[in-house]
Image 1 (tube, rainbow, N blue to C red):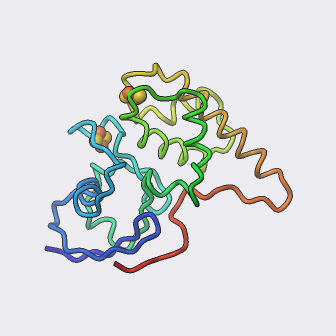
Image 2 (cartoon, rainbow, N blue to C red; image 1 turned 180 degrees about the vertical axis):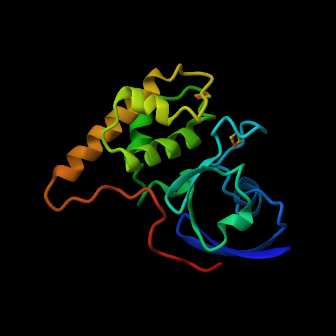
Length: 176
Ligand code: FES
Ligand code: FES
């Protein structure tokens, strides 16, 4: 076993894990963060996407020990004070989900996409999300949702003194 300390959604956890434990299994089975889901065993669906130190990763392709000392944000850490993250709201308002299985990973990947490129074209959105598969929507409304979130983010950034909602872990740290 290897001892790791990881900040997940703003809370610091220290646990002993087997070196072979995947980050997605650590999140779901040890921490109970079942909002992050598993959709394949080939690392190609993207349903398990989380942010690792602000970068979008497929948590089924990262070992938990690789996250030692890092900050992880899952879909469960996006909302603030009972308010959905703008990307979550955009997915809801633009009907960007049907069964919803791909949605946690799709939203996390979309947030990372806008962090890298705040004003993406439709092609850039489709290209940026090509690591995330959706079997239901045909992607059209997902693209519309990301465009809407990008527009809202730009409008918020243009307001004097306004700060856009962060996509990484919040500052508060609580030891378990
Ligand atoms: Fe499919 Fe991770 S579960 S890419
Ligand atoms: Fe069903 Fe995307 S909404 S897989």
